[in-house]
Amino acid sequence: MTTTPKGPDPRCGEWHNRAMMADAVVVNSRGEILLIKRAQNPFAKRWALPGGFLDEDETLEETAAREAFEETNVRVCSPRLIGLFDDPRRDPDQKVTVAYAFRVKGSEKARITDPNEVLGVRWVHPSKLSEYQLAFDHADIIARYLANRPVHANVLQRIKDLLSCLKHRR
Image (cartoon, rainbow, N blue to C red; front, side):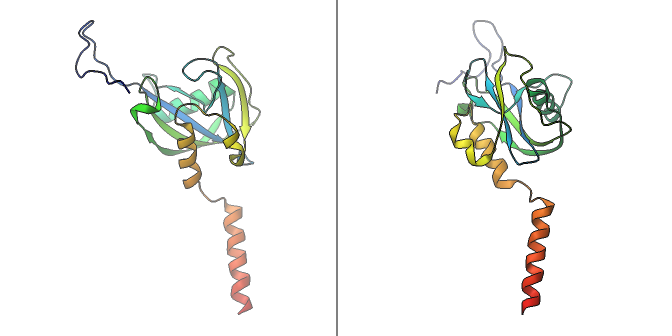
């Protein structure tokens, strides 16, 4: 890894600050995660989470939701912070990202909205993610999401029912 010297660039006097981005782990009703196939470098033709740069007039959460819609035409709701990812090696340009998990709001029909930016969109079950070459540190982001995802109410109810049955067997 090359390091950027501290302080302003001697050629232009500008500081080298790391850019802020946001990524979205969008999950549908079947527990699948929405991926995009990147059209541009870095990592052209690799699969990634929807995401992009923070605009001046928005929060990182709003950035993640906006990028998910702009890149896939899928609206999202119920944001949940996954974490901050700032390892300088995560991105060739050393961008910092904040990742959020979202549920789908409305239609789960994803589609390419800008072929100059996205070559494909696909819902992928977590058990199949190893078949995809993911860009950046998106495998780490998804792994953190999967390790901390909430238990669905119906699963929790089944566990309670099972415990109740076991209790009555005594």
